[in-house]
Length: 261
Ligand code: ATR
Image 1 (cartoon, protein in one colour):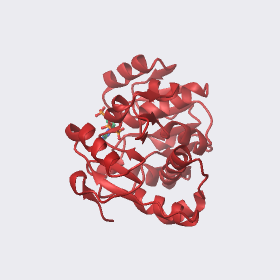
Image 2 (tube, protein in one colour):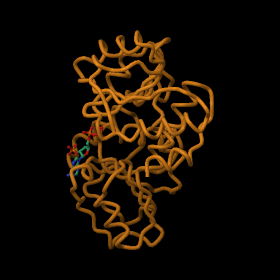
Image 3 (cartoon, protein in one colour):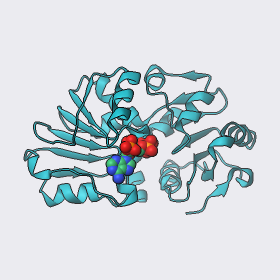
C-alpha cells in the first residue's frame, strides 16, 4: 500500500495519519467504501511525526483535505489540536477522527467498540495504553462490570483514576469469573503472547482482540475452543463511523470488510 511523507502528500479528501503508517489497511478500506458509494473521494496514508502534527494538519487542510483519521502515536495530539470535541471524546482524551475546516474531533473507536462487542460483563480488559482508554470509557458508559489488568500495574491504576471509570485493577490476567476478555495491549503486534491461563476460562467466554493482524492471543483462545473476534470488525466500524461523521452518508460495511480481509 502506498503512503507519503506529509510534505509530499498528494491532494486528497481524507487521510490516515500515523507514524509509521505504511502497514495501515485504512486506504484500501476507505477507497472501497467510496467506490461503492459512487464517490470519487481520495483517501491517502500520510506519515506524520508527532513533533510535526500541527504543522502537518494545517498543510493538509490547505491541500484540500476535509478530514483525517489519526493512529498511533497521534491520537492525543489530535485531541489537543481540536477546538471542539464531544463529551465521550473529552473523557477519553484522545481522538482518531478530525474534521479540518471547523477543527472538530471525535473518537469513533469507543462507539465502534460498543457496536462490535457482543460480550457480556464481567469483562476483563488487558492493557492500559491508548486503546484501553476508549474501551474503558465505552464499557463504563454502558454500565458493564469491568476489571483491568496491565503488565505495569501502576499504569492501570493511574488510568482508572484519570478516566474516573468504575473498573477494578487486578494483579494477573485471571479469567475465572469473566464472561469476556478484551485485549488492547500491543503484545500481538510484537508477536508476543500474554501470560493467560486459558484453562480458567468458562466455556462461553467471548474473546475480543482490538488490533488487527496475526494474534498469538486469539490463537491461544481458539486452541481452547473459545469464541474469538479479531480486530477487523473494530477497524471497519471505526472507519464507517468516521465516514458518516465527515460526510453524512452511510457506507457499506461488508464492502469495507472485504477490502481489509
Ligand atoms: P496503544 O496506544 O496501541 O494502546 P500503548 O499506549 O503503547 O499502545 O500501550 C501498549 C499497551 O500494551 C500497554 O498497556 C503495555 O503494557 P505496559 O504498560 O506494561 O507497557 C501493553 N503491552 C505491550 N507489550 C506487551 C507485552 N508483551 N505483554 C503485556 N503487555 C504488553
